[in-house]
Length: 259
Picture 1 (cartoon, rainbow, N blue to C red):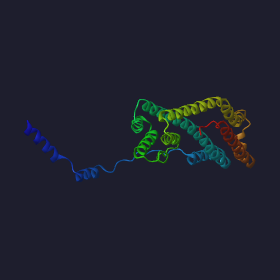
Picture 2: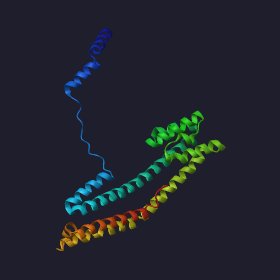
Picture 3: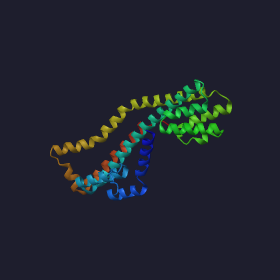
Picture 4: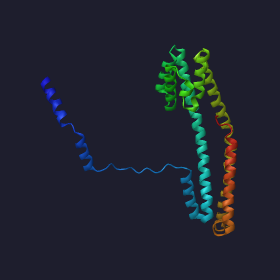
């Protein structure tokens, strides 16, 4: 039986494909196919697409108005998305620090606790925890080791506890309470701003609804907007004023963004 196993292993090693064989196989099958992936949307791409659509429908003025509307609409949507991502990141940070506090109060060494928390933390939190653990293990500056801006308070609390001999778990628990309060306050204000934000969006869309109703009633405003110089100028001015109002209302309702 042992001889059979040895012969089988020897035959496997003899038939193992070499690098030359792999290159020949790749040459026979051809280069790997490139899968088409559409470009990620951005401000320039959305502005160009909106300009093309507006130019087809309403001429040169429609192209300009479409470019302005597409760029402003995309930036407005991106700002809302960044606010949600910021809130979620602060929540993840609070959960990571809460786990660190639990490890410390269970009696774990601070370096071991940070390394243990880094295993289950999100990517940014895991990197920051490993940097803090490495700096603390080597006796370096913890605040200089952390590159993630969200973890600056954690690193400062860690350094403060080490410098003055304070209980690290208690200092980090205070940081967790502050993070929870910030998230709670931001969510409350965000919920209260839903009504004003919706009203601003409805007011911004009213001119479009008016033009559509005029077209349905037979007034044919599209012909005026696309076929006359005054209509083209009014179209660009109207869309520009709508976008300014949307951006200004968005700025007013985003004052509760997390710092």
